[in-house]
Length: 372
Image 1 (spheres, one colour):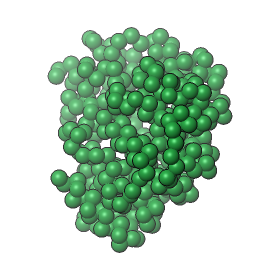
Image 2: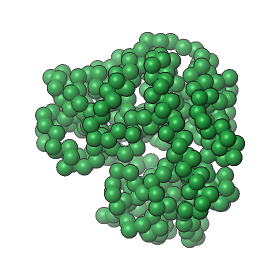
Image 3: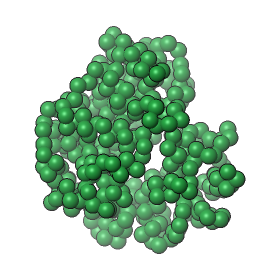
Image 4: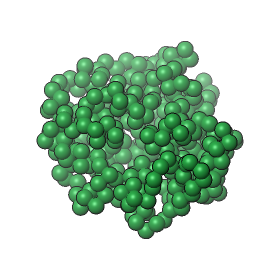
């Protein structure tokens, strides 16, 4: 298994100290965010968020690349810890697990459980909630949004230190105690919008309810539909109270994206393309596709299978193509091909495609799905 060879090579670099750590720029996820904290705690001289080989090659010395794509097979002083190049998500664990092994992390049982779900959600997508019981995604949205706002050199290493403190915490909690973490929702200024756009701000409403009864809420039908539940972010703010201010800032930014999605929909700054069974929504802006889809449903602008196309944050001239998990049996982006396709997730729920416009990319993808 090649990935284990990479983990061993990375562990040797970590033991030598003096290495640099690099992950992708653009939107962050829980696995790369937590992996960054682990590598920082394990002696990385610096952590970077970069997107191109040209940028990475400018970094001197030994470099651990993580969650950035197996296409970055660079000289021997680089090692790549990534799982995106596989055809089956079961083949390799995500970067947080690979990095945990490389740095020799030893987790308390509750932390190990929460990291396990970070790994499964990253590899298998929202459908992991089918098996997760009370676990899911909630305050992780604030953790990753805060980390994802930095590009280039990550300067807020205090945040990484606190996150590492949470990863190595021995705090043990009953699941009911996590209600305390969700009181953070009371400090967010989006209650009025949550009433007008109940689906777009569904996770905020669930957080508010979870502050009173987290187990019932996180095992509800709504939680199942949205992937909501107890996550590492909820543990982190209880284990390391100083993290709350960072997670709160991240949540404010996360729900600001949802607010922008409602503004795009209400002002009709999108194109709806319908060809056959599948429709597409094309938006010439960078906005997360999931809240955009939810806002369209709140406005009753959609009916049936749909894919969403928005500007990609990492790659100029490219677009993110995304579909809701409920349409997995109809829309699978692993089917699309050609040199315009920069990335396809191994579960088929999203891809990155070059194009002249969001509308043109939508037509290209719809045609390929129809042909297949």
